[in-house]
Length: 497
Ligand SMILES: Cc1ncc(COP(=O)(O)O)c(C=O)c1O
Image 1 (cartoon, rainbow, N blue to C red):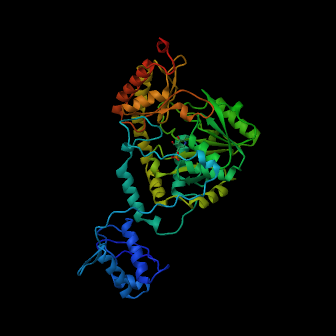
Image 2 (cartoon, rainbow, N blue to C red):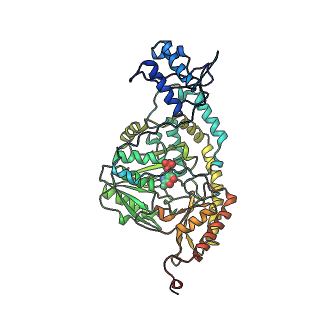
Image 3 (cartoon, helix red, strand yellow):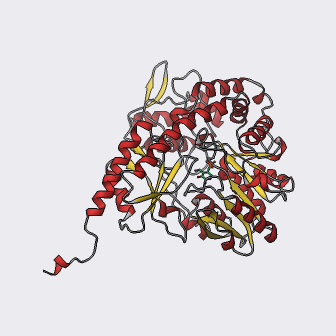
């Protein structure tokens, strides 16, 4: 039975003691306390429950508990302090017994999907992708809104909320994406999710049968590719050219096509209007669904963007997915999807079966953040900062780095891509490893290709402070220079002389 914390004691403990097993009750209590002290679950200085209290909870006599305590005291593991209680003494520090390794294996599809988490310390020059600048996050406003919601009506109901998410947030999302992205939707059309990733998961669960073909961009976004594989889909990578996904290369019979038309991931180019029209036409002829992943196009550094696929779609084939991971913070885990009415009941059911609903207090605070104009203000301010970094990177790609790399044109988002010049031979992973020694972290473009292999680098500018961009790129240029000079591997003529 669990022992509840003692409000009057200096340290609360919550230790489970079972009376099952061999030996008398005192021996069983002794053995379990001993184990807990030796493996570190009970730490030196922690106060044990009074004998009377523990006896009552275990429904044994007080003498039984006292006998166990006295034995542990005699063994030097407990210390009795008159008038205060019984405490854990300075026992040899043990370690908690490991959870057994176990022989049960996951489904084979998971073998290739297990990845180490990325909690490495931030490098000095952080060009990693996908990270917004946490220093730009309007913390005081957010804290105020969150505190207000923790006090107010949100928690009064104290029950489960609607799977589609906080009503006010759905309305706010519909209005704001209507204004900023011309996505025409009402609040009822929106389902709030735990980031865009959960939106893809719900869509997959509702629409994709094991064995169905799912087409993804190549290069593309690995978490989406992996997710659909984990759901049993046959994921087919489709090449991307300067206009976007090559529609004529789509496999017949694809049930679903995932695309990033505003800012192709990772190349950064927008999909041309002609390609958008061709994709919608293709989906109509093949009875396929398009998932439009609009993950970071709020940050735009030029004229109005092309209309999203969603607003060009007249047949209800496009599911629009957005996220606050880039405009605010990934740790908020708030994203959303806009779905045709025909799919919403099933998507809401999938959401309920997944996690019932997201976190309503955050969602309510976010609704106010959007409605009060704070989101638009924040995006405007952050866009200025990101535009300056984008500009500095573009300058370096046209200057110091121009001997090796060609920039891929891009006017939005939080990263830029550059491909290796056709006549240059240098090993990008070696360059990045060398740059890494100088505190630079950037990613190789090849990492995002499935069958298509493009050599180049992706430079994220969400996380790196503006004043470090030039120095970081100078280190990268030096790494390119050093690697170009380095003799290539294999035998050289000097080896024969
Ligand atoms: C292509 C793409 N889609 C979606 C997302 C957003 O994912 P989430 O909202 O789950 O954080 C990202 C984030 O990096 C992305 O790069």
